[in-house]
Length: 454
Image 1 (cartoon, rainbow, N blue to C red):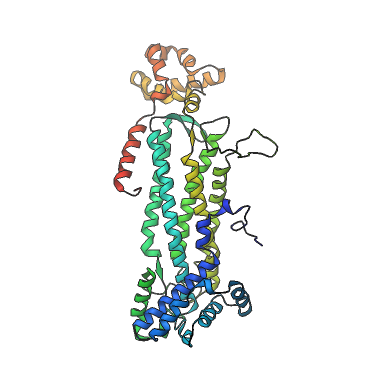
Image 2 (spheres, helix red, strand yellow):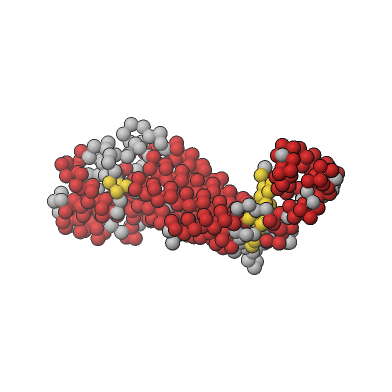
């Protein structure tokens, strides 16, 4: 029986991916605990702290596949401790009494935290791969459409012409900064913990430093300079950056959804055979994929908020705070993975209706070109006077239901300053995209040179 959107067969594809669910599965979580115990035993044996035979036996038996997880869950409920039943289960797996050396010195949170870091590092590789894949699709769209004119909009209404490639390049620039953030936090984030009950390493004696270094080297994690049991900012930062990524993906998805509306018709997510938009309106082709991304982008922010609450750890250890992370971190990673996968799909098959974009540029009857006309007129009458003349013509024209060209031609001062042929040329929106194509080309060249999309 399932009860969460993350594991319900009917909904899980909208909230997570198979790959990321495996990373945060119960089996993998316990396996990461066992990986810690096996690496610790091996490092302790190297330093003569426990027998080599014990380390070998623990390493050989530290396999979650050999553990009865339902029985482990029942024992966890009985003893009301998340780790002790797992340690006892591993101890029982070891022959010849060598299981006595399992978990020789660390505290439970050493295992929880380091195990979580191992899971997050595994998730990180998936997220970075998919973040790069989405970014490549945006690069392709920016390059292909750097000359494709469309209406730029501010305050929800048409403002001036841009190109669709310019819009995609801005989206790409956001994801590029997120890529930088994710790379920058790696050395800060991916460190383990072996500090004992209150962070002083008292149970490990004089070899504590050497032991921790060997343990983390075996696990592929960095060594923290001091206990982070009560300092939860590492995972807090990680989830916060996932929240930023989710916000950017949600913004892009929402933009596609808005531009897919029938009245606009400039973009459309992929349509596959059998896709149904409505149970009662057979004609509908809903933006179901990008709409789901918008949902997840809103949901992930609450994982960020929960991680901020988890910063309020008390004294030297506070598992009440840590347990919030057990919910927030996996869910944030799963939602981020789902968003990235869905956006890669949506962008890779995105329909760009250049003809509709061009037609929409004429939707206002030429009024979109008021800035261009104003600056052309400014050369003859001055900028402020030009603004007043064009403003008056635009307001009269829009109120009177005539085109911008007709409204401008009715003003004697404008007629005297601009020849009819010159005015007509000024009103072509496809020739007023500014430096957009060059800006896109320069930005894409810089992106290529940085190498982060390779």
